[in-house]
Each structure stands twice: as C-alpha cells, then as structure tokens.
Image (cartoon, rainbow, N blue to C red; front, side, top):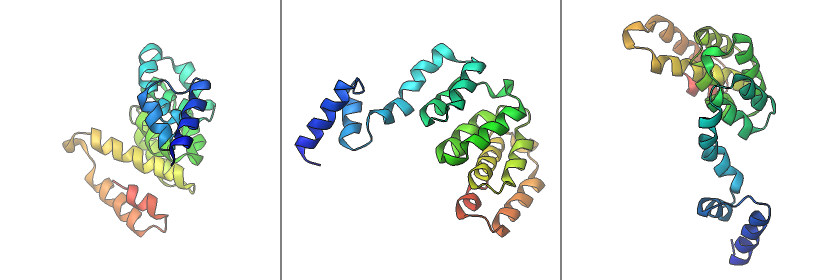
Length: 175
C-alpha cells in the first residue's frame, strides 16, 4: 500500500469521526478499518455501564449487526435468558461464524438448559447452528469438574462426529 493511499484513508476516517487513536490508524493501514477495533476493544468499556440490561442485550442482538451482536453477548446474562431466546440467538447467528461459534456459546454456557440446547443444536442441518452446539458443549465440558462429566456421553458424541458426514468445520469443533 503506498503512502498516498494510507494518508487518504486516514483523513477519510478522521473526517467521519472513526479514527480515534493510533490503533485505529494502524488498523486502517492494514485494511481492517476502524470498525475492527470497536468490535473487539471498545465494547469492553461500554460493557461496564450496561452489564445486565437484558432487554438492551436482546435489542442489540436483534439488529443483526455483528458489532451489536457481540456487544449484546458482553451485556447479556445467560442465566436470565430463556431456552427460546437462546434458540433464537443461535438461529439468527447462522450467517455469522464468529457470533455462532463464540458469542452464542459464551452466553449459553451460563444457562441451566445449556446441555440440552447444545445437544439439540448439534443435530441441526444448518452448519453454523450445529457448530454453535459443538462449541457450547465444549464450553460445558471445559467448565464442568472432571468428576461430574458424563464420559460415556462424550465418547458417544465424539464417535458420532467422526462418523458423521458433516462439513469438516463441525467435525473438528467436537470436544
């Protein structure tokens, strides 16, 4: 990328009020744009002021915009969500890999119905919903004490994932 292009891009971001600091500039030079940093760094600052506002979390998630969906997960309390709400989140994330594989499972693992939802989603014909199921189940396995794990169920699921004619991404998402 030549210097003239970098300069133009930075000026454009500044005019739009999107380039706030050196990290934004660095991201813009590498083609990521200022939105990349907002998505991964800045929502953390907002989380502290809006944490636990479930209705706001659901509204943010319903926008369908990846940054808002990510922030929704930072705000949401998975324990307070219903299985129906989490199902809707998984379905809505079926077009966004990051949201399906990280955001939805992160919130779901906190919920008492997490295991049942994970098992249900793993059977989905939608690749990213199934992947959300495997990621949720992996989170459950990671957070559960070893002596409380159902090793028979885990072995059975691993056997299913290796025999299944699923896309490789799902096969490798298995715990």
